[in-house]
Structures are given as structure tokens and as C-alpha cells.
Amino acid sequence: MFRIVIISDSKYVVGAIENRLTVWENNGWRDSKGKEVQNREAYERLIEAKEGLEARSIHVKGHQGHRSNEQADWAAKEELRRNLLKCGAVGSIAGRAQEGDENLRRTIEAVERGEGPKRYLVKGGKLWCDNGKALLLVVGDNQKEFLLQLAHEHPIYGAHQGIKGTRKKLTHDYWEGI
Image (cartoon, rainbow, N blue to C red):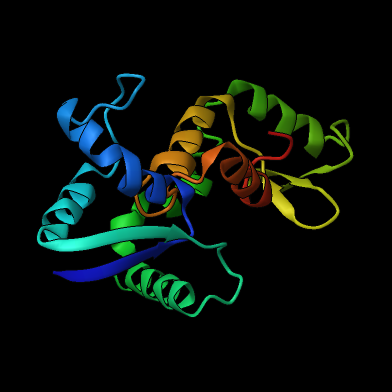
């Protein structure tokens, strides 16, 4: 029997491999809260690939110089670059983030009259917030749920980073004061 070690910087993935795959499979691919398991197809392929192998998984901190993890990170980013068209939703956030939001329209008008919040500016017809480090696109209320779901659950862009990771990503890229 061959032995393999799966190295991941995702505690969620390591926990799934070590503890939850069988439970999920037995529960019809539902988690403990009854929600459908994300990335089911990938986990099913993993179960199939592990047949006849002695496999264990370990967690390593991401971006800390672990050679195998850095290689996997590079390969994932390279695959993303090659298949960027599959991620059209990510590129369209700036175009959609403020569509149809009446509150933002009024704020844009106020900023253009010089009456809006000092940290806000209008650029290219969009409302931006200057947090002192970068310009962040102000996300309309009608797009916040979509953006949260994308940043947290999308198999390529989100990769289930948990609450802190999702908050950090959104605060850094789009959503001031989340």
C-alpha cells in the first residue's frame, strides 16, 4: 500500500479530509447544518483517488515558505490565469456593484455637489472610498449578499476562507467598513 501526505493551508480542507468526508457522503453531501457541501465534485474525486492508498493530511500556514504549499499556490494561480474567462463574475463586480442602488445614486450626487462624506469621491461614474491606503469601491446594498457569497463560497475566487478571511478580502478589495 502506498502512503501519501496531502498538505494544505486550509484548515477546512484538512478537517474535511481527516474527519468529514465519510460523514458528508453518508449524509447525502450535506454538512452538519443541513447545507449542501461546497466543492462536492472535488471531494468525490479525492475519495476515488485515495482508494488503495494510506493517506493523511496536514495543515501548514499559507505563504510561510513551505515548498510544497508554495508550489501548489503557484499552480492554482497559474490555472486561474489560464482559465480567467471562467471567473467572469469576479471581473464584473465593479461594473455591477452600484447598479440600481438609489442610496448610492443620491450619495454620488451629494459628493459631486461637494456635500458628501470627505473620504468619498466619484471616479468614472462610480463611488469610491479613500481609506488612506487605497481607493475602495463602495458596494451597493443590492450587491452585498452576492459579493459575500462570491468571496466566501466561490470555488475559485473564494475557496471558503472563513469569516476572518472573507472579511479581510472584502475590506482590502471592495467593501469599506464591512
